[in-house]
Every structure is written in C-alpha cells, then in structure tokens.
Image (tube, rainbow, N blue to C red; front, side):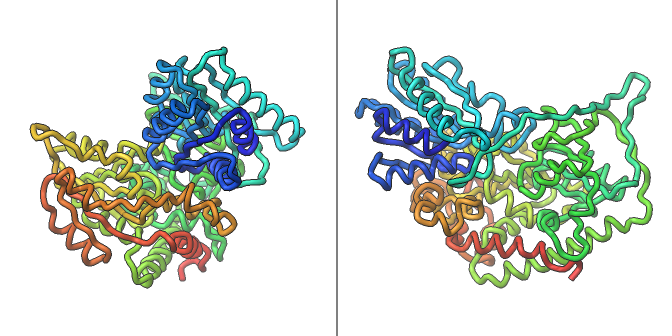
Length: 552
C-alpha cells in the first residue's frame, strides 16, 4: 500500500513531501525515502508534526502542487489540525497521509489508537478516505490499481483546491515487502455487573496460575487484588499500582523467558487493569487466545487489543486465599535474579545509559513526590528501573498514556506540578525529541505561577525508540538515520538560556545524582547525555537476560 500511495502522489504532481517520524508510518517512510533517493521528489523531515504541517502548507502554496504530510497514528495527526484549517480556508492542496491501526483495534484501547482519527478534521478536508490494509490473499495488481484510483479521486476533490485526508490502516509487520493482514471476527464479551443486592460479584479461585497486569491509571485495586490472591503484579510505572511486595520489576524480561521454568508459558489467566501500552510481551500476553483474559473496567472501558477478553469486571471482586504461595515465590526469585543481571549489565557499560538515568530519577522521587514521564523510551526505561516503592508513601507517577503521544509533555509536566502543590518534589523524565516537541512550554510570563520542577532530558540526539524496532535493523541502515533517527544537533543549553531556564549538563551517573540532589528551584533542566548508536545492541543485551536460567 505504502509504495502504491507514494507512486500515485508522484504521478499526480507531488514534488515535495514532509515526514514526521513514527512507527506505524514506517512503510510510508521507507517508500518516501526510496522516492527521494531516486530523485522523484524532495523529502523534508521534521520532528514536530505541527511544524511539519505548516511546512507542507508553505511548500504547497509556492509550488502550487499537492504536498503530502505523513504522520504516525494518535495525537501526531491531531497536531496537523491548525494547518488543515488554514489550507481549507485558503484553498491549499495539503495532503494529510496518516498511518492508522487496522479498524478492528479501534475501541480496544490498543496503544496509540483512537476511534476518531479517520474523521479527525471533520468536514474541513474536501475528501476524507479511511483505507483498510491490503488483503494478502487478494490480487495484488488489483489492489495497487485501487490505491492509485483512490489517490487520484482524492486529489481531484470536487474540482476545488483544498486539503484532503488519506487515513491508511497499516497492519503489522511494518517493514517493506511484507503482506498486510487483518481480521474482524470478534468473540462476545461477558460483562459482570452487581445488582442492587450485591449479587453478581466476580469470584476468582486458585485453579489457574494467574498474573495481574496493571496499566496506566489502574490504581490501588490492582495491587490489592494481587496481594489478596497471592499473584504476581506486573505493573507499569504510571499504573498507580507499582508498590508493595508483589510488584515484579523485570516482568517484561520474564515474559520473554524461554529458559527452565518458563513462567510465561505457565500463565493460564491474566487480569488486566488500567490501560497497559508499554511492551510487546505484555500485549502478546493479553492478546493470547490460549490464556483466560479478564478485564477490570477502567474510566473509558477496558483494554482488549486481541479481542480475547472473556469477562469484564464491573463491580466488587472476591478471591480465594492463596494455597501455598509457590507461584508468587517463583516470580519473585526470578525477578531478583534478572534484576541483579540487569544492574550488572548496565554498570559494565562504562558510559551513562538511559536506563541508569531513569533509575536515578526513580530513586530521587521522595515520598509524596510527583513524577511525569514522557512517552517512547523514557517510560519503558523507567519500567525496568523503578524500585519497589512502599505502599502509602503517596508517590504519584503519571504520563500522557491515553494515546501515548510525545507532544505537549513539557506543558503537561508544568501543569501537573502546579496542580499538585503539596508534592514534596516534582520531577519530569523526557527524551530529547519529546522535550524539543514542546520547548515552548518553558515560556512563562513574569506574572505566571512557576512550579518547582526538575526536568531531566535524556539526550541522545534523536529518536532512539526506533532503533530497537524492525526498522532499526541493519537491512534498513541506509534510510534509518534520515527518517527515523532524526538527529537534531540542538544545543539545549542555549535553548534553555533563551528562556532563562537553569540548565545542567551531565554525562555520568555521579554527576546526574549530584544534580538531582541539588535542585535550583523553579523550573530547571538537567540534560543527561547518552549514546544512541549502541541503543539497539543495549536493548538486545537486556532482552537476552530474559532467556537466562531461572533463579541463576
């Protein structure tokens, strides 16, 4: 689909294209890079979708040709709205090409998936098309011809000039030369709700080895259930559940384990609370049709990316007491071993690692403290490094996990700090691209309230989240740096100086710990410089720890 769409755009007059990096849009990025390398168009890459949209607008105004702006899914698309409105009122041929998840993931709380993306801009575009992925069993020539016709019809509009929106549902895998595939066969879901007499309470026995997965905003009920049942608690940092003796620090590694004991293979039931979005091992677990998956209703529904949830808990839960505790003890022993392995691996790297930055921030968060954590790698690195916090210390760890976008993070952190003035300390952990995406959040007027907020920016000069994904593989090295790595070479010290924001720059763990121990007051930025060229190898070494022998 991606190559056909880019070919069709070029055939209909496109000479410039603007790309904002993303994972769901990977196939489009590869197709654009190939077209640019072949001299068929000029490619422009920007890390901020709002800027990308207006860059495409300017290019379309002066070139008088249709200019596509290509983004990944979720809030990335919403950042284009101002440019789309300007194009609609000015009659500019701006072409929004947004990558989306397949339609069957809408309404399941799958990561970076919203039901509203295909209609994001209302009636502002002249034409809006929501395009399903290709059918790997269908005639490929016919599909390509269909996509060419679709682009031609969209660009023709109604004979007028203005924006159009092509929302392309992209199914995994997302690298070149792989077929798309999707399904709309959905099983029924039983929702358990108590009646006025309290009947209908859901009950769990101890017949199946069970884990509790706590995603964003799950809250204390997930922890309480795990403790009452004697089950392991696999809790994300922003779950509000990552406290107590049942929290498993390295659960992500253990879910990838295939060694002796194979805890993942023995899980027969999983209870899902909140909105888990951080890791593929968790997504695979809660999407496994061979596992009984039960969901606890959250504020907006429940998470079910695999359409395998058999029951939804919408009321009180009772649980049989644990039998012998052996299941939990196996998880705790394996977790302790993997944690030691991980700490030793990171300490042996020599240079400061992103995980060590996350660990230092986590340790610096005092009781009653507030931590805002950005999307992409920081929240995933934090996930492996959070210490086992004590229940009742009222630490608050939050992030924009509804759609897991990187935009607006500085402003969200400032707002969170202002909205919780009783915090003993406020911290933020962001990647460099996330920080730059909202550097305007540092601009506060002299009469505005300023929080005490330490923003730790993990600076590896680009988008390291993509290094560990398929597109970061050696086969794609010729295009990776331009369309995914996106180095920016920004001098953060100078940027901070322009807004009179205190700035520290550190490149070792002792320096970072010293900076965190000595806050300047007000808003300050601590820039922790790490490498990006070894990120893929580092992540591979960490994942390999999950294959070690249990309890070693």
